Each structure stands twice: as C-alpha cells, then as structure tokens.
Image (cartoon, rainbow, N blue to C red):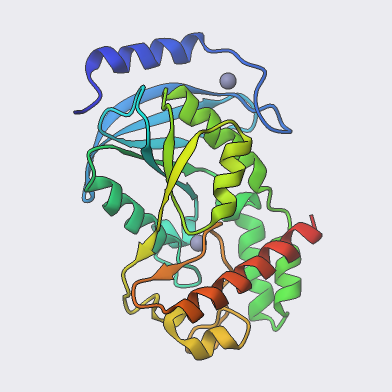
Length: 264
Ligand SMILES: [Zn+2]
Ligand SMILES: [Zn+2]
C-alpha cells in the first residue's frame, strides 16, 4: 500500500504547523515541506523533502509504501556524496551502497532511505576534494584525515531521528553493517528492533575490497595503489567476502573513525 492523498495532506499540514526546540547541538528542526511520487529505476517511491531551519540542507526521505504508524520499517541512512552518488567516482563506494539500498527497499513492501545532504559525512564538498588533492600530492592518510576530521556524525543521527518521527514511523530495522549506527539512533530516541545486513554485490568497481592483500596493507587501496577514504559510516561488505576479510575491513574503518574524532 502506498501513501494515499489523505495521508500526504496530513503529513504536509503537520509539517506546516510543526515547531520544536530542534535536535542535536545545533538545535536543528526539520519539517516536511513537499511530497511527490518518485518512480525510479529501483521501484515506485514517494519523495519527502524536509525544510531545515538552520543550515539550509534540504534532506529527503525516499519512501516505499505506507510507513506511517508502522513497526519494523526497514531504514537506510545515506550521507550525500556528489562525486560517488552522482558522478560515479571510484574513490569511494558510496554509489554501490546507495544503489544496493534503493534496490533492496524497492523490492520490499515498505521501507525508507534517508538521504542526508551532508557531503562527505558533514565536512563539505570543498574539504572532501581538498583531502583527495592532498593524497594525490603525496600526503599520507594522516593529513587527509585531518582534512576529513571535521565530521560530525551525531548530528546526522539526531536529524535522521527527527525525520523518522516526522513520518510517524513507530520502530525500524536498520539496514547497516555498523552496530554503532544502531546505538546512535537509539540514543536519539528511535526504537531499533533489528538489523538488516547491507551486502553489496561484487562488481568490477568494488572488487578491490575483496582483495585480501589490499586489506592487509592496512589501508583501503585499489589495485592501482590509490587510496579510498570511507565516506559512509558503514563497513562495506560485499557478497563473497569471508569472515577474515570482514574483520579486517571493520578494523580499518574503526581506525579511520578514531583518527577522525581525534582531530575534531
Ligand atoms: Zn522539529
Ligand atoms: Zn563517496
């Protein structure tokens, strides 16, 4: 069942009337401002656009089916990555992660993808490109991590939680490989009843993650020796990875997160 006209009208009326003190350190309040159908290559969706009272970032929810007043709604939280999502950059796996999630949700009766307009996990496009540039000019990942060190994931989750509440979702099953995201959403008042693993299909572009040798060097390197910095707060798990490979990649991701928070 899709969202019907009555429900859409109610959500829009509530959006117009909504007022709260905001969430997170920056007291951000997001209000549903526009809803439309979004037929896509991944299935039939509605797109819900949110007005943001603080920083002009217009987050959206891609909604499959009627998720209002519903328990255990499958939810994926994705951080915007212009270079990966739109331009098909191979410096990250954001597009694989996004497409896998949309395809998964598109095949379900109900589900939501929150598309957070927080380029490079909140550091902004310029800082992200700066980090890429530093790597090209021979700086090591420490330098690049300094450029990537402004990330503020907490805000992500408080705003994401607000969006789920605005949609009247009662409880969720989070599509993720990262248990920390479940904690973060729970801390922000969301009832997370389960986790759905986010397993990507192998393709010519993400194959480097499957190379044990590349993982064992301690960095995410592709076969040409180029480094990849994680932009999504999720461990990329690809069909065919064994337990050892998944453990290694988890460790590398933890290291990146730690160096990120140290320089904050
Ligand atoms: Zn609010
Ligand atoms: Zn990316």
